[in-house]
Every structure is written in structure tokens, then in C-alpha cells.
Image 1: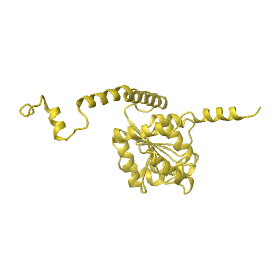
Image 2: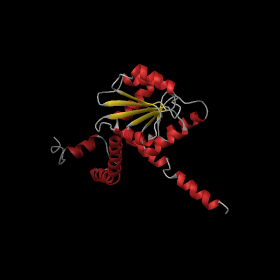
Image 3: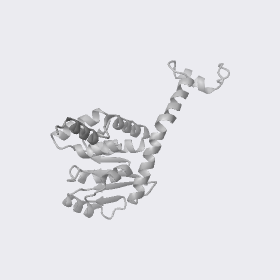
Image 4: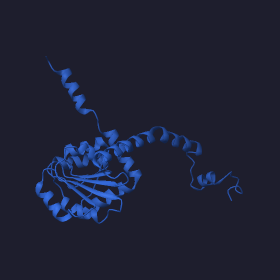
Length: 232
């Protein structure tokens, strides 16, 4: 059919049917070359770091991990979020809940979900960056420390219910910059998280926004600035 219409194959016919008059297969080939040159090494490095983090934590290499954290105090709508997530996760997906110093929350979660093999419940941890590197997405409130640490690690973020005040501003900043998503109900939060987890395009787009929007060496730069301005 394509040859009868004067084309070598279906590729050009497909372009014509889609009305693509701004670029040709040549430009598409160039774009693919740029992806291979610029993006593939970044994705490969992320994968390498993630596998190393999983190994250090004793996690399964092929499983996808959903991290749920409420900051150091274990705040947020975790009591309602965990059961909502458990209703949606699939066979090779696992929840890791970090309760921080909130012992009452940890006790409640252990009582409700301690026997569920799909959930790992932890209290305070001293190696949070390793968990951030190992997991595929994180649910967390809008606190500045956890949110910044997560964005620098380039783990896709689903922001839960904020504490009114500065966390509301944090949410607006992160969402506007494409560095996180949020919703106002547990159902909406789960749906947004599953979209990130199962859609590599959405996940990669958020990671690119985090890479562009976050300064990874801010502490060092602040130190250098203070040192240069200090009067000895």
C-alpha cells in the first residue's frame, strides 16, 4: 500500500497521515541519538546506584519499593495511606514505612500490618539516604528537610497532607517546579503514586525537574561563601 502511494515503506506514509510537517525521520534519528548520548548514561548510573543501595539493605533486586515517611516525627496521614496503598500495589511491589521517632505510630502499624508480608515497618533509621536511593517513589509530607533530601536523591515524590504554614508553601514550590505531585485525598495520592511508579515517562520527567531544580552541593557553597565573607 505504501509503495502504491509512492513511498518506500510505511514510515513516510505514517508521517504523512499524522500531518508531521515540522520534522522528518532525519530529525527523529538525531533526537534518538541525543537520548542515547545524554540520557541513557544518566539512567544507567541511577540504576547502578539503586541496585547497590538495595543490596546494602538486603532488598530484592527485581522488586519495586514504595517508601512512606512522615519526617523524623512520623507525621502525616499514614494511618489512612497505608491501607489505601495496600489495596492497589501489585505482586512485585513492597511498602517500606519509616515511622521516625513516633513510637505510637510504629506500635499501631505493627499491630495492624506487622504480619503483612507486603509491608516493612521501621522506626528511626540512621541511613535514610540509602533508603531514598533504593526505593522507586516516596510518599512524604512537605517538610523542607525530607523533601529536599528526596529531590537531591532524585526519587519521585508524592507529597501528602501538609502541616499548615511553611509546608503549604513547600508543596506549592515543589509541585510548580514539577519536582513532586500531590492530591487532597488518600485515593488521589495513591493514584498519583501509581502513575509515577508504572509510567517511566512521568517518573523520568520528575527526576529531570529535580536534577535541574535542586542544588546538590549547597552546603559546600554556603560554607565557601561564609568563609570568603568572614573577617579573620
